[in-house]
Length: 538
Image 1 (cartoon, rainbow, N blue to C red):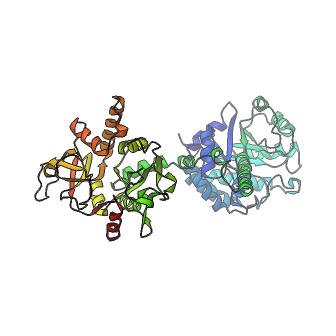
Image 2 (cartoon, rainbow, N blue to C red):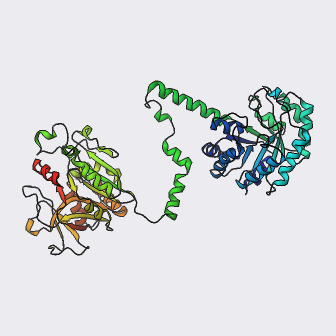
C-alpha cells in the first residue's frame, strides 16, 4: 500500500493514532523500529538539527533534502511540518509536487505569515494569515497534487495568537471547506481546555490532529473520548537526543576517559545496523564483480626462543628486531599483501611485548606445557569461517609471492614444501614432508598430495621440508575445525601436539587430503642468532 494511502487511512481511522517526531534518516529509522505507524517531520527539530532557528532560516529545499533521506530510510508515511507552505499559493503548489516526488505522505501548513516564527515564541504577537488567502493556498495545494491520497492538514494558530474559540472554529471550518483533509488545532496552555472546547463545537466535520506538548499530563483516554484522530509527539526524539549528547560530552570533558560510559552507549555495530549495512553486503554479492574475500590469518608466536640468549630476556623471539622491525612483521606484511587482513597472533612468553598494530591477540597461558596445537586451540574460535585462512609461525618469513600463491590455492587444505635440502644445515629439527609422488624432478604438476610430515622421516625418503605454512579455504577451515573437535571429543591430548602431528593425522585418518605447493628457497625459519644475519639479506 502507498504511504499516502496508509496515512489517509490513519487520519480517517476510528481509533486514536499516534505519530512521532524525527529529524533525519537515523531518527526516522528509530521511530519506525519503535513501532510507530507514522512520522512527524518537525520543522523545529529539522531546523534545530541544522543548528538554525525555527524561523524559516533553513530553506524549503534544505528541508526537502532531509525529508528525502528520512523517506528513503523508512517504510512508514511521513507528515511534514510545512510551516506556512514557504510562501504564497504558488510556493504551495510546487511544495506539494516536490513532496510527492520524494514519497512524503502529507503536509501540514499553518495560518501564519511567511517567514513564520515558532508558536512558543511570543505567540500572541504573531499575526495570522488572511483566511481567504490561506484557504486559497489550501486549494492550490489540493489542485496541484497528482496522488488523490496525498493529504493536506490545515493548522490554525488562533489559540496561540490569543483569538479564542470563535476564531479557531471559524478558521478551521473555512480551511475544511477549502479542501483540507484534516485540521490541526494548536494550543500552548498547560491544560487541555482549548482542545476540549473546540471538539465540543466541531461536531466531527473532519479529522482533528493535536500536539499535546504543553498539556502533556492529560490522560490519553480523554483524546479518545473527544474523538481526536491523531496525536503528534512533536519534538521529544530531538530533546532526548540533546540530553544524551550533552551528558556524554560533559562526561568526556570532565573525565578524559571512555571507561565509565563506553558500555552504556549503543555500539558502532548498532549504527551500522540502522544504516542497513547488512542489506548493502547482499547488494555487493549481487552487483560487484566476484572478487576474493579478504582472508584470515593465525600466527603462532608463543615460544620464547631458546637459542637467542639475552635477546629474549624481555621479549619472545618473534619480537626480536632486525633493522628496526620485529621478526613477525615480515609474516604479517606478507599476509596483508595477499589480502589476508583479519590477523590473530597467539602469544605465550612475554605477551605484553607484542606491539604489532591492527592485529588481534589471543593468549596461550599454558605455552610452556603445550605444543603448537595448544597455541592453535587458544585461537580455536578463529578457525572456522568464510574465506581463506592461513596458519603460520611468527618466526617463519616467506616471500610475498609464496604466500600469495598459497592463498590462491583452490584445494581445501594446502601446505608449502621446499623440495630442496634445507639451507639451514645446522638445524637439528626439520619438518620433513613426504609427498606423492615421492621424488620430484621438475616441478610442473599441481596435484601433489601430502603423505606425512615428521621430523623423524629419513631425509633420503622425504620429498622436501614443510616451511610452516598451511592455507585453508572456507570449506577447508571447517574441515580443520571439525578434525580438532573430533580429536578433543575423543579425549586425545592434542594440546601437546605439533602442527606436523595434526596435519599427518588429518591425512592418515582420511579427514581430508592436503595439497602441496612446492617452492625452492624464498623463506626463512629464524631458529637461532645466526639466522638473524640471513634476515638482513632477505
